[in-house]
Length: 121
Image (cartoon, rainbow, N blue to C red):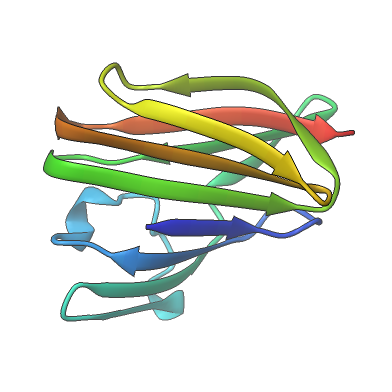
């Protein structure tokens, strides 16, 4: 799963493969979701919220995952402030050309969740 947040946060584009869309409760706008044979393309308003001087992205998933992999891309000159993930997830973070990237993966997980805050650099 890839999640793209632009430089003016609030909306996120979620693209990737998913076995069961019902485990992604944050997909709250059915008219902006396209899902076909496990391929997902959705514009989402509920993933990113204002948090003080920065932003908070919360990506909860329900259910059991044999394999979990999500990559988050935030463009627009931001820095990570705090990263919280479910135990068992491995995290790799990087910053390049004014964008931040968080690559999260794990195996045999129940209800994995990724949450991170970021602010303008």
